[in-house]
Structure formats: C-alpha cells, structure tokens
Length: 329
Image (cartoon, rainbow, N blue to C red):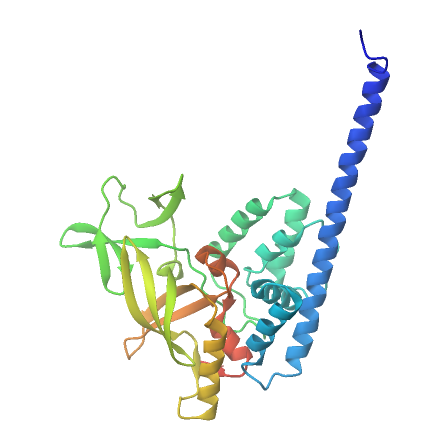
C-alpha cells in the first residue's frame, strides 16, 4: 500500500526543502569564509602596525610571531600569511567571492597589478584553487622581469623545482644538476634542451619543458649552519639520489661584517627566522669570487612541503633589507 504522502506534491515539497537546506548551508559556509578573510586581514594589520613601531629591533618580528602563535592558538605559518595578506592587500578585497585558499595563491605574484588582475579573473571565471595555482605558476615562469616597486626592489627568483638542462660531454648527453654535478641522461627520455620532474601516480618522471636562466637549480635544502647575515651552509637535494653541501651567499644583498654589532644582529635575525624551518627552497645562479653560490632563499616556519615554501614562503634576502639589516647591492 502506498504511503499516504508519497505523491507528486510531497516529492515537490521534499525537493524544495532539500534545495533550501543546501542553499542555506552554502550561504553559511560563504559567510564563515568571508569572516575568516576579514579576520585574517585585521590580524595582519594589527601585527604589521606593531612591527612598524618596533622596526629598530631586528629579531623582534620572528620572536613576536612565535610567541603569538603559542598564546593565541594559531600556527606560525598562518600568522605570517596574515602579515603578508595585509602587506600585499592593504585594502581588503571585497568585490569577489574568493576564499582564503585562493588569496594565499596570489601571494606568489610579484606586483600589485598582477595580484589584482588574477584576483578578478579568478572570480569572473570561477577558477578553483588548483586552476588559479596553475595559472599563477604559468605567469611566474613566463614573467621576463618582475617590475620593481619601492618595497619590492629585490625581485625574487622563484624557479621551478627540479628542472634540468641537457649538456653534452664527450659526445654523451647528461643532466646538468648544477654545482659542477651531472648525471647520465636517463634511458627512455627523449632528448630535449630542458626537462623537469613530474610526480605521476606516486612515481617521478622527466618531461620536456621550457625554462629561462632563473628557472634552473631550484631545489629543496636543509639548513646546516648560519655563518653570518648573508651566508648559509646548506645540504641540497639535487634529485637522482644526489645531495651536496654548499655555502650559499644571499643574492643581491650585503649584510654587515660579523665583527660589528650590526653583523651580529643580522645573523641572529636569520637564525631566528630559520630556526623552525624543516626545509628551505633555494634558487641558485652562479658562484661569486669566493666560490659561494649566489642564491634566493625562501622559508616558511613549520612547513615541510618544499613546493609550498617555494610558492608562498618568505623571501629571506628581501626580509633582511626590509629589517634594515642588509643593503641592496
């Protein structure tokens, strides 16, 4: 016997109520996301204002963030993201429906104009976070020369992880890993001027790609020792079960010598900034006259995914300039 309310009128009512409930859940989630974005922007504004008033204390910023993380129950990485959000978007974006995960992807773009362009395009096109990330990464690789602004006067070189050039030695093709290291060209890989590692179904493979000079020699590294305010000893994972210990000189900056109070402060700043970083992302270019490789170093406390560190991490070279602990050279 049919249920007395199992008719077309009931089914219509049921569907209407289901749609209302789903729409209500979506509005609630959207409202929560909007409030999170507003709150994180406000948090970044408060911390930035506090740091601006204490700018003469070089290690204060890292100490402040670490203490706040413990006292207010937010992660160190999230607090750094809040600071970056406010600094990159002093006026809170309110004309889009993008959430926090979308906005964090925009942090890797080098100029305000590009960030605003991608902000509105992503909203208009309805891009997912992954789609936005793919488009931003293409832009970063294709950008021939980041535009300099008063604050961004040392553009970062965020290369592409594990991208290799082909070189020929004694008639044989080899992979150039940098640091005077090469490996035999892998069997089954077509000859190409440039290849990069791709993770597919849990396995790494090499695929042809394109690359500029600053695309190469971008790797995962672990800190061994801070030598001074602009020099690090690191262990670099070059891929292909190859690691190398190298002394890196931070590109484009010059910190005071270690026998000065300023030099001591610069080293303490770097030690404090990198103390809770399980990995670093580095892009190296060439050795200086002392055979130290010039490098852009990116860091993010408590983040172990090097791709995230490379895309969203703080740029150590520029942090030292902005803290007044190094000059641009």
